[in-house]
Length: 289
Ligand code: PAF
Image 1 (cartoon, rainbow, N blue to C red):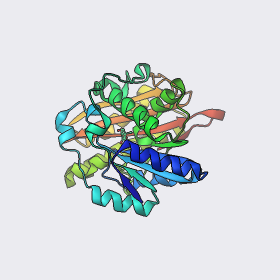
Image 2: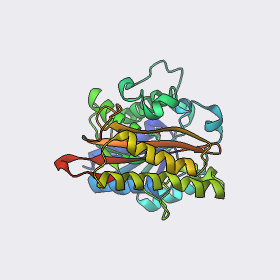
Image 3: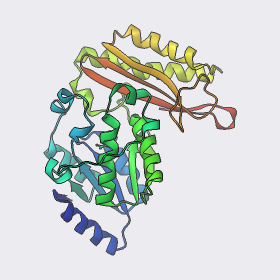
């Protein structure tokens, strides 16, 4: 596995791979890898021959400087995990390599007014800007994003289409710990008690699935049932528990089209997100979470 820090080096390797007839898969990350990231590489390997991963903690997507300062970093461990997962090239730029007095930002405003976008001003603009830059640097055929960050994934799919990035975006299901907690680099920050209480989030999605299976389609009833379960876990703060349409991420009163039911909840200082995609095609609702 090659580890490179400069854009020019990365381009040279990717060009050589392409010359050898290989297709290129790309998984952007901010490091501190867990099985969730590695499952994105697995997915990418199904579609492409040469795997590129980036590790870059992108300051401009952190609306809270404390959150940026607290972001966990362990590059040696990341390299070992990436190597084991079959990554061919890791791109680890420093801030100067990515941003030198940049004045240009990318935004997908209409898809980021709700959910996390409403609570983290500037966050998505930072994400879309760095992902656009990374797409231009790596020029992948396929790029894989996790369902856990559903607003990010759906918006990047739209951004790639709108800006004619010649890349296919794949959204891969959320990986969970055996007790249901969605895998996240942030889980490390939870105390044992907070971690136990945080299981209420995935339990609330299970309860929503049950309600939907029993025929309930009113968003307010489903999200109120979820809130009751989450409230019982004594969260520090609930940012949102919402149902939105999958395509435009706008609020829906009824789940009668492909939708996303999503929650963002704090335990202590740690903000956790989770969601479920509800597909109502064919009249029968299928929940993926
Ligand atoms: O999902 C993430 O880890 C980040 O938002 C991403 C896509 C790597 C951009 O910095």
